[in-house]
Image (tube, rainbow, N blue to C red; front, top):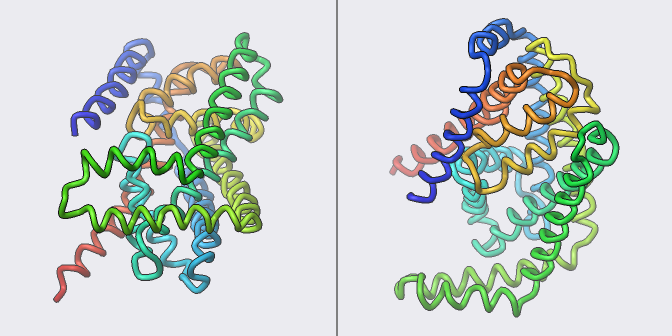
Length: 318
């Protein structure tokens, strides 16, 4: 709980500093003039992206249950998103594994979610690197940004490789088992940990599944960028689809880092940097960031909250 409060406070402090540096009246004028029809089209693009991301996860789930329905994948994805945006690093997204309890054990369910997230982050890194190389040369410090992105990507890949080894996982899990897991939960933890390790071995042997999921994920992200394009257009901000394709993967990557909640503050700072490079104002950057928060986070999070509420009601019915 304390960590949650710290990260929330950090993001709010960054946002407060940014708001103190801009013209709030201009920002409100931009937001009040938003074209709701174009914003509505962005919702349609977001819906297409969600369906494709759910399909990507379904392909991975198919390793264990080929008949798992896409509708249930969408509901679980929305519920996981709602939990994820309220936690640093989107760790709440792991709750998706709960919805798979009737098809596989919890350990293997967690592996499907983590595999899905790894594919997403890998695609974002690839798009971010391409963006730096192709478009962000207009930034004076683009070489530094490219180097930083490559370093983080290399560290990410190294971490994935390390944690795919049973020996490394055993080293990590032993302290958890001895010092953190209560005695009455240790038998259950052993079962989940065993399923998790077995699940990793299963995934490593399904390269075709990873490739297909990656291709679906790439198309999903193209729809996500289309959503951002229409959000920008709804505010009268003239930016190209290719420009957003270049910068938004970097912005979304920062959103996934455990340094703020839902990218509040950090997203605004990055967008001010990128928009400033093409002579757009800070007020336009903050307005766009606010629209992303509302349409790409809160609205989808509300849909996920409704799914969670529905699940709670089902449990309450005897």
